[in-house]
Amino acid sequence: MHGPRLLMGILFLCLLWGCALPQVRAEERLFLNVGVEFRGEVQLAAGSQWQNTEVGGLSGLTYDWRQQQFYAISDDRQQPRFYTLEITPKTITPKGVTFLQQTNGEVSPPNTADTEGIALTPEGHLLISSEGVTATASAPWIKEFERNPGRTIRALPIPKYYLPNGPQGIRNNLGFEALTLSPTGDRLFVGVESALAQDVRPNIPIYCRLLHYLRGDVAPVLLAEHLYPLDPSEAVFNGLVELLALDNGGHFLSLERTYSPGVGHGIKLFEVSLAGATDTLGMATLPVDLGTIRPVQKRLILDFKTLGIPLTNLEGMSFGPPLADGARSLYIIGDNNFDGKTPTQVLIFALRTQH
Image 1: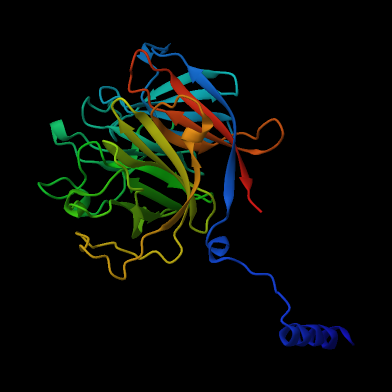
Image 2 (image 1 turned 90 degrees about the vertical axis):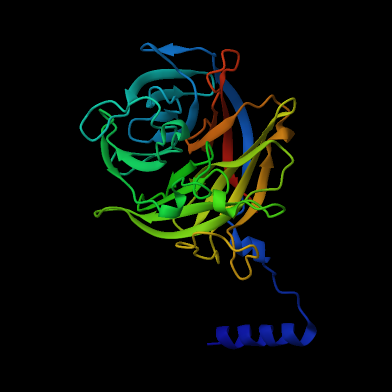
């Protein structure tokens, strides 16, 4: 057979004559190179009511493929709850509300939770995170709930150095904001909005921490922790507000938000890769010089200011139903902070692979 000999001959001649072989950039090997295309905006009017509750403060979003509906977590500290929503390119329609319950079936007491992240498991349960409430010394948590009636199933383990205790732990209103499940549902990733108290130092970049859990037939197990570097910003508020797993191989979308009075909100979307990131689990305080510690790597996909539209406090992110042309959809929802003048904003994108 002449095939193998011919191929070897061509390769030899290429080496001899300096033929240009295809080059693959390191970034192309590291990332999936996804991109987004803005498809539109839809809003729910400020002050909208559903079953004697105000539909607002929606800080996390997840999609139920079986029921073809969204679940959005509200960060109302008085009545922790999630909504069932129908979201189309034209309307946002509430379909139900479920109040979170304790393991004994009693409704969660007021001022004990500030719920921010939400994800739907393959078993039909919901994983929800809370930043905690400093005023009532209520600790941050990550819990699994029944969808109906919203009863707590279990709490996930959290490293002791995350718990607020003087100059250590999650800072007020900067806790477990980002939460996502891998497509197969066996891996859970939860990120804090900003650095832990013990990791904050002058002139040192801000590193959020990401927790990585294994879940399935047994109780969830904490596997690893990684550092996520926030983009530098002069804004008053700057944080990681959402993660969304793209695959089972450690690739994500991340959403960062800034805010300054008189300036408004800045939103950026990144692609993130865990490849090569150092496991920092058990490292209660980060060293001043990270040295050989490697954070996760990220690349900017979209700076939302280029969209040319007014932006609200965008915090939640989820895949959704296919768009009219069959493209994979990405929905990003805003927390209006129960401001009577600010609607709930949802931006819709088509997700694409760049070539």
